[in-house]
Image 1 (tube, rainbow, N blue to C red):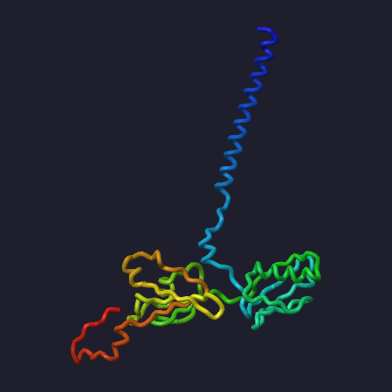
Image 2: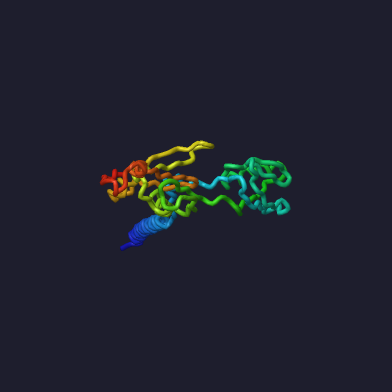
Length: 237
């Protein structure tokens, strides 16, 4: 074998090794990308975000405002009954109904008038805790803390369950739709529980109110003769 053939073989060998290394490198990169995608946190489900909206400021809420580069403007403020706060160096600003991110942006824009690119953080100290109200024919009507995901049937159980006089088939759920107005839906809890299917059991939102009306029997009971005056057949709820 002459030198020319040896050189040609070496060149071919070098090309083959380069190609093999390239393939192996691509396989390693692909596997790494796959592992990265598997370990990366998935984005929150949109329906979950819709069910759990961000808290919006109310009158009486208290929060701390901190300035990273301008601590002399650090302050604790309270949302006044009219929805305004009074800021040091700025004056009155309307904030009622804003979320914390929206409030932070409002403060950043306002303080940009007197400070250069202010770095601001907001921490809620005292605010209205999420709640729901149970009323009507339940064991313990009242206002309850809303902690985590609570469905309509769970809320009924938390408030003492149905009374004998309750109309299970027409439970009303009132929800704030806009300022001063409410939307209302009727849920047949009796049907859901009888079928053992709670797919239509809604998750409550902060401020919801459930109302359980009386059944027909409880409405007519005062006019029905007692057992000593004759037998009667109870009406179905």
